[in-house]
Length: 400
Ligand SMILES: Nc1nc2c(c(=O)[nH]1)N[C@H]1C(S)=C(S)[C@@H](COP(=O)(O)OP(=O)(O)OC[C@H]3O[C@@H](n4cnc5c(N)ncnc54)[C@H](O)[C@@H]3O)O[C@H]1N2
Ligand code: MOO
Image (tube, rainbow, N blue to C red; front, side):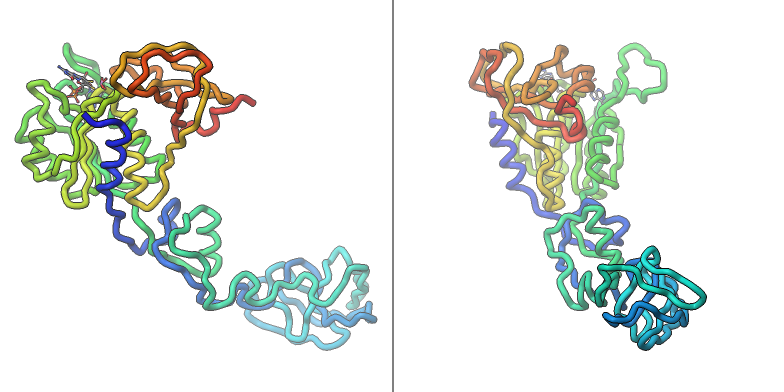
């Protein structure tokens, strides 16, 4: 059986970044740019006022100017002023021909059609945004590899860009196996359990900005599973199966994967929860067989699926690992890495009760996974261990 780190490396070794795609700016949030973007225009495209006030042709000795017109934002008509003249002007409006300076309206006195400038700091060019001050036509605006943050998207829109080439996010299909599964909201018959894996996985994927998520249900029989797997592979870049990867008579994932031409890269990792995790590829498509227990599914998602999904889109792994002090003693058997649901605050990590992989109550209240080494049995309070911060809990790590 392979170790946690070996499994992580095998997955990364099998990833090919998805082919870049032209995308409207409105859909590009959180993606990585796959091209250098150049400005097509000078921005601002004209000399404009940065204040509401009066545009003048600055003359050091002159304090009084005659009002001859107005320039509003969005006007398509320009006017011309000469020495001793002024035009009313508003923020964002083009400067009149001949003007080089704007006086804020709080810093003048208006009487009849004349203004008197009362601004000791007045100087040529004050309150004027020069043409091309933000960026010049032809200049590099953003480089390939940049993350499209809200500010980056606003910047690109502001210089007239409407679509960009990005590394897309993968399309994901979740395949639920298990005859016992029932949709929440319905009464349970004997032997049935509520289906919860699609809820946790879809929510985790949406949090990362994944938009294409499809959920397919399949009964525990080989033919149906093969058919559903083909469908899932056809429509997506990543297939996440839950359940059916263990050794039971109704666990068909491994056999179905082989029959669908999925090359097995590993099956089983020295870890708890999630020991029977399966990973395979079909060309560039990734297939994860997540052990069905709800806590195993999520633990494997954070450890293996999330980094893979990020890597497909050329994004860094969003799982942050930090060193922390274990708050209590802990005992575990040798041989498997354990991931414990825990609470991390102010550099200390506390394992929660209810660590069994069929239950999610502790996961629901945790903000981290505490990683305990496979080759160690006794852990003592105060000892340094590694903690994986859950990405949706970033505000919960520090006491105010
Ligand atoms: N003889 C052995 N039995 C088991 C082993 C083993 O090594 N030898 N490993 C155990 C471990 S560890 C795990 S984890 C599970 C994994 O089993 P499967 O991946 O085959 O999953 P299932 O048997 O289908 O389901 C396990 C458990 O999870 C529940 N489940 C499944 N899907 C959902 C869902 N969508 N929502 C909520 N709950 C779900 C299912 O009802 C089962 O209770 O195998 C152990 N057995
Ligand atoms: O590894 Mo299983 O996920 O412990 O129950």
